[in-house]
Amino acid sequence: MSNDILRQDAATPIVIVGHVDHGKSTLIGRLLHDTDNLPEGRVAQIIESSRKRGLKVEWSFLLDSLQIERDQGVTVDSTRIPFLLGNRQFVIVDAPGHRQFLRNMITGAADAEAAVLVIDAAEGAQEQTRRHAMLLRLIGIRHVIVLMNKVDLLDYDEQKIAASELAVAALLKQLDIEPSLFIPASAREGDNIASRSPQMAWYKGPTLTEALALVPSPAGRADLPLRLPVQDVYRFDSKRVVAGRIERGRVSVGDTLVIGTHGTTARVASIESWHTAPQISAVAGQSVAITLEPDVIPDRGDLLHRPEEAPIRTARIRSRLFWLRQEPLRVGESFRLRLATAEHQVTIASIDSVVRLDDLTEHASDHVPPEGFAEITLAASESILFDAFTPGTTDGRGVLVDRHQRIVGGAPLIGPADIASGTRAIHPTDSTVSLWDRAQARGHRGGVFWMTGLPGAGKSTIARAAESRLFGQKIDVSVLDGDTLRAGLCADLGFSEADRTENVRRAAAVARILAETGQVVLVALISPRAADRELARQVVGEGFHEIFVDADQATCEARDPKGLYQAARAGRITGFTGIDAPYDTPASPDLHLPTGTGSVGEVADRLAAYVADSVVLVEGTRRRS
Image (cartoon, rainbow, N blue to C red; front, side):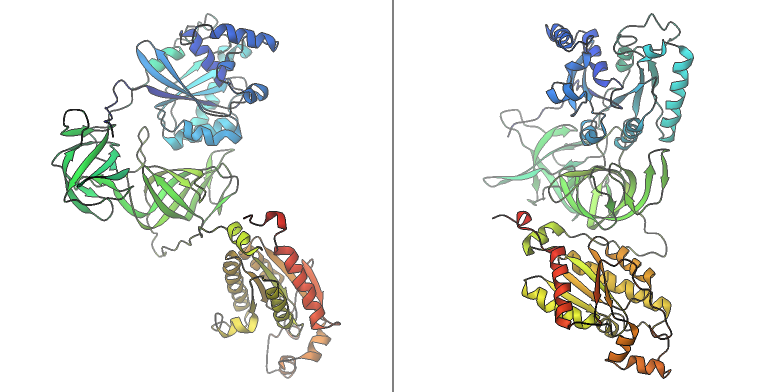
C-alpha cells in the first residue's frame, strides 16, 4: 500500500450543461482554441473534417469523438478535459444535453465546483434547460454562469438579448438559483469567449475566460469535523490496519474516534507509512491506513468521527431525488442507498412532493415519473450516519442502486424525517427477489383472477376444480374463497355497504401479496358492486383479471346450496344479493364463464386453460441453464 499525498493546486471542475443543440460542444472547442489549449495540428484536423462534410469550422468535433455523435449531432457521454487558464488548472466536464443521456450528466457533474449553463438566446429555456437547472440545484452547484449563446442570430441586439435573459433569470429564480452573471456570446464566432466582442460594445461585463478565473477554488475541508469512511480492513501479521480516505477534517495519532453506529470508541495508535517518514497526522483529501487501540474491527462503510462531533443519526431520511429509471417510482420499493463506502437497505416510505417540470411547481403525487424530481422519505431498518447535503461539498451525496447494482437515482440527503403527530412509522418493504426472478424459477408469473357472480353461480366450486387442474400443471395456485375469508380475516365485518367494500379491499390486498410471491390466486367472491371490483383492480395492479361466473338468478336460486335464497325470501336475511340487494353485471370481463349449462369440469377446464395461457412463460423466456 502506498501513501496518498494531499492534493495541492487541485484542478477546479467546471461542468457545461444545456439543451441539446444549444452549443455546448461548440463552446468548449472554441474555448480550447482561443486559449491555446489545443494540441498542435488539431485545428487543421477540425478544418479538414468540417470541409469533408461541407460545413464551416465545427468546433464541436473536438468533443464528439465518437462516430455516432458526429452522425447524430448529439453528445452521448460526459467528457472531462484538462484546461489551463493562465496558471490555473481547470477540468471541463461536457455533460450531455439529450434527454436519454441525463444519467451520464448527473454522474459527470457530481463533483463540479461551478457550472456554465448554455442557452440559445433565440430559443430561450427548453425542457432540458429546466432539467439541467434542476440537476444543478440537486447536485448543489452554487456558482452558475449563464452563457446566452448564438446572439449572432439575434444580430447582437441588446434589447432582444436582455428579454431572453429576463426569462431565464425568472426560471432560475423558481429553483433558488441566482446566477453569478449572464454573458451574451457566440461560440461559433468567438464573441465574448476569450476576447471581447466588437459587435457588443454595450456589454461591459467579463468574457467567459475572465468569469472562469473568478470561480472560487475548491474550499479546503481540513477544519471541518472529521469524517473517515472505512474502505477496508487489512491484516498484516499481528497488526490490523483500517484504510479509508478522509472526506473532511483531520486525524492525529492519539485521537479518540467513534466507530460507526454501534458506537465503539478506540484510540488512533498509528498512521501507517511505507517507504516514507512516519506520519503523526493526516487531513482531508488524504487516503490513510490507521491502527486502533483496542484492536476493534470496523466494517466497510463504518464512519469514523470524534465523540464530540457526531453526524446525524436516523433511520428515516428526507432526500431530494432525481429518478433515472424509465419506470415510475412508487412507495414501498426498496433499494440500496450508496453513501461514501457504505450501502444501506432502504425503502421509499413516502413521496412527499413531485416537481412539475413545465412550471417547476411542487405537487402531491403517488409516484415519481421517469427522469422526475421529487422530495421523498427513505426508511431503513437500522440507523444511518450522515451529514446533511451541503452545496459544494460531498456531504450527504447518496445514490440509489437496484439489485443489479445499477444507479437508478441521485439522492442527496437533506436531513432526518420527522414522524407527523398522530401517524405511525409504517413503510412497506419491497422484496429483493424480483417478480421476474420468481417467474423464471417457477416457469410462470403470478396473477389474480377475480371470480365474481351471483350467490350460487358456482364460483367456489369452479375455482377449486380449476385449482386442482393448475396444480397438476405445476402451477403454484391458491384459492381465496369468500366464506373462508369471512370466517377468518374478515370475521369482524358485517354486510353493510362499507363492510362489503372493506371485505373486497382486504381480499384484494391479500391476493396482491400472494401474487407478488409468484402465486396464481383465484378469488371467489360475489363482490356485487362494479365500484368495489374496480377498487380490487387498483389494489392488485398489473396481473388483475376479472372473471364473470355467469348463471341467471333462477338457476342460482334453484341450486341454493346453502339455503340462503330461501332464507332471504323468508325475510330471515336482509341485503342479500339477487333478492333485496343489486348485482352489477360486469360490462367487459376478461373471461366470461356461463355456468347455466355444461358440467363443472368443462367450465373448470376453460378457466384453467385461460389462467395457464395468461401466466405460463413461453419456452424462449424460461431460464436457460
